[in-house]
Image (tube, rainbow over all chains, first blue to last red; front, side, top):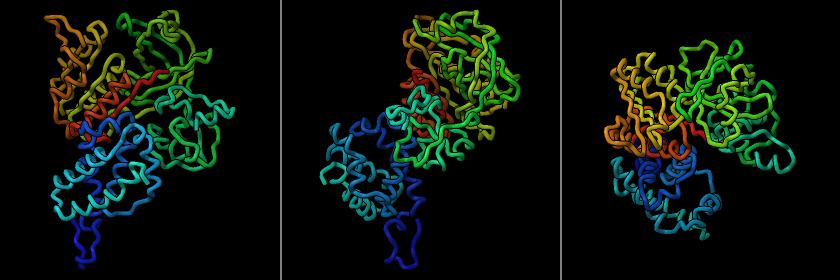
Length: 130
Length: 305
């Protein structure tokens, strides 16, 4: 993990390890999601390499990194899943897998909480409630 | 994009509408970013702005040209051999015009004189590049192409071959990883070529092939594969069928299921899975979950044509 010389100024993204951390996390996270029967049906039938790219973008965002899409994008992107019954329990399962991924990678509970909090800010948009 | 063009009165040649056959190729003024729009295309096609119109949304492209003759190379070809490998699998050999090159595991699109087109995998090992390629074609009862292809008198027929296309190949810079091949029916065709490429290159690591079918009678090339495994101790061949009689040398079960039972940890493996779309997509998913890198899982899904 990178550390900034002015520790109290380094961002969450830097503390986690930036783009390198995202790369290390993507496969671990995506595999957990695909193996999780509570949510894996929502990932069926989609091109896997395309999906892996989306996971990478999601992780970049919740790691506090640069994010290129809006709440509206999140809402539109998940609308067809919401129509199929996507709800809070599924969102919770994803956040759980995210936490487990970070724990596997040795990330501190404090940083995991910060990442979970960032993920939480997308709940309303993902579930189409904004 | 494909549907939009067709609906607005611009007929665009197409086939599978699943991103596999490459018939709906169009060209944009600049290369597209979206990986799904160019998946499976050669570097030269990609960099010249070509994309699969069935996998691209209208908003993703600004200007479109219809491709010129040079986009996917075309070759004159003639059928030189026809034989049955089993009651439901035909072996066709084609001789191609000078200059045609390919890598085993790629596929081509064959166009008959009356316009009928189908894509077939090249079953010939790369080292046998003698200007001839082989197909292993499954016969579908009542199928238009199947009726034509079951007839031995097609030897001598003149065809146009477009291609080659596809990335289901043995890498020339192979890292000699263990290889896992999971296939059913004529999905064996591209894998036969890749397998021979690997063995010809002296691939040192274990190679395991699971070839499945609903019945033992649906399998073919069993003798050839057994012969290869006798000559190469690192190659293990596992024929399997959904229903197997007592005393059979085939294992009972689905090739993917048996593969994952025997090899639950696929970290470091290179995986090949070709054939029926349901098997191939499930294989990609399950082999990835079992630890194989997504970039080292080669699939060729035989979409209905």
